[in-house]
Amino acid sequence: MSGAVSSYATRHLQALFGALGRLVRAPLATLLTLIVIGVALALPAGLGLLVNNLRSASGDLSNALDFTVHFKLGTPVEKVELLAKSARERSGVQSVTVKTADDALQEFKQASGFGDALSALTDNPLPHHLVVRPRPDASGPTEVENLRRYFAAFPEVDLVQLDLDWVRRLHSLLDVLKRFFWVVVSVLGLGVLAVIGNTIRLEIQHRRQEIEVTKLVGGSNAFVRRPFLYTGLFYGLGGALLAGLILLGGMAYLERAIGDLSAQYGGHFSMEGLGGRGLGILLGVGAGLGWFGALVSTGRHLRAIEPRA
Image (cartoon, rainbow, N blue to C red; front, side):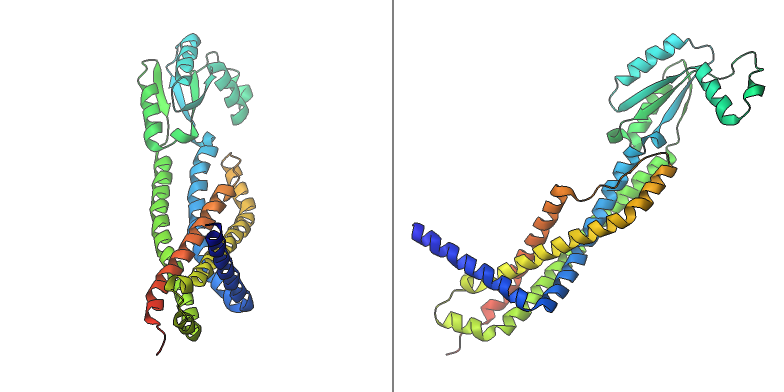
């Protein structure tokens, strides 16, 4: 039993190193094929990263999602504190900050530049208010609207200042990008299969006489197919690694510009890369496409090659 296992492993190792050697002996053709596969894998992976980073940005730029709950004039600050405490216990609320009328007036004096003129006021015309920040995972239009209705239901609340239009636009854009992502994944995935399948087909045609001799001495289709499957696997893995390098370089190029843009909106956003898990998925997808493309191509073309009498 151990001898059969050892023989099986040896045959696979021979096929593996044989396929790798043939790729190394044709560096230009191998490189060109890897570039095509790498670009085809990098495009959907980059789009997926873009969608994920935009979703993260809507949470990281959380102060842009803050909304203000204004109370009616004369509402006791104790009541405001009580409502704030109750609101902090709600799911979907990250923080609730109480701003008293005095705090609001002081901030307005500093921001407006009319501090001396405003000091002449005998009464404070500003109400108490709350600054509510939703949780990043509850920053969608539906969740934010539910929070708005929750605060607006209190009789002490005069106005909930919230602009949902840009939130709706952002999430609609993200949904479009998500659908577009799956379309791109499907189209380019088929492209990768076509490239690998055609490359394997050409390799089969180039080695036709060798395949005929192998079958003539008793080699099975599975034995003949094995090195081609490893070739497809190497193409997929190499293309995925190249796609990872393309994404790494592209994100490094965009990092500073995106950081400057987020700073203009009062946030500090850093792009998230593939990470170990993302790279593993990319390598797995590349290897799977390479293996499957080689499997389809060999299954179709090897049956047509039979030894001549």
